[in-house]
Image 1 (cartoon, rainbow, N blue to C red):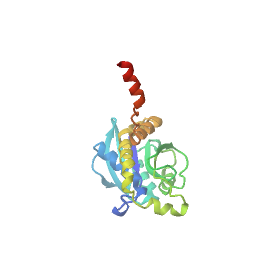
Image 2: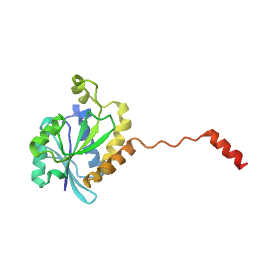
Image 3: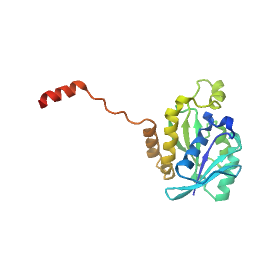
Image 4: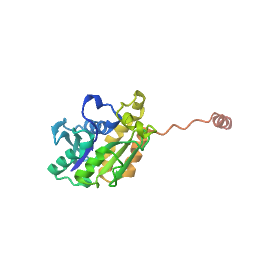
Amino acid sequence: MRLVVGLGNPGEKYARNRHNIGFMAADEIVRRHSFSAFRAKFSGQVAEGSIGGEKVIVLKPMTYMNESGRAVAEAATFYKINIEDIVVLHDELDLAPGKLRVKRGGGHAGHNGLRSIHAHVGEAYARLRLGIGHPGHKDQVTGHVLNDFAKADSDWLMPLLGAVADHIDLVFAAKDADFMSRVMLAVQPPREAKTNPSANADENKENN
C-alpha cells in the first residue's frame, strides 16, 4: 500500500496558488485513476483507489501547510504504511516552472510542509519536487508562492500534472529516472525535424 500526499493550503482563496501545486497533482491522480471521492479523514481529505494493481491512499492535509505532518502521521499509522512507501507532492522554488525532480530522504530545505512531515514521521519518504520558479529575491517569496498561477502557466502546468498522474507508478517502483524522463517528455515534447528545402531540391534533381 502507498500513501500519496499532496501539499497545499485549504480553502478556495488558495486553490490556484503556486503553493498548492501539490493539491493539484493529488487531484489529477484521483481523477485519472478513478479513485473514490475525497472524504474527510485524518485531519485532511482522503481518496482511495489502485494504481498498477497496488492500493493507493491519496491524502490532502487540511491543517494548512505548516501542520501537514500531523495528517500524514495519522494516515500512515492507521494504514500501517512504512515511511519509505510515502510519496509527497510539493512546490519547489529552486526548480524552474515545469521542471520536476524526485528526491528520497534528506533535508526539507526550509519548506514548511516538509519540515512538519520530518518532525512527525521522519525523512525517509519520497518527494516529487514540482518547480514553480523563484521570484529572484527572498523578500518576494511569500507573495510568489501565495499568488495564483498565471493563465499562460497552463501551457506547462496541465501537461505536468497529467504526466505525474499517468506515470506515478514508476515512482512506486523506484524507477525515478524513467519517471522524470516521461514527465519531461510530456511537458516538452520533441520538436519535429525541420525540412531542409535545399536538400529536398537536390534530391529531386537526382530523381529526375
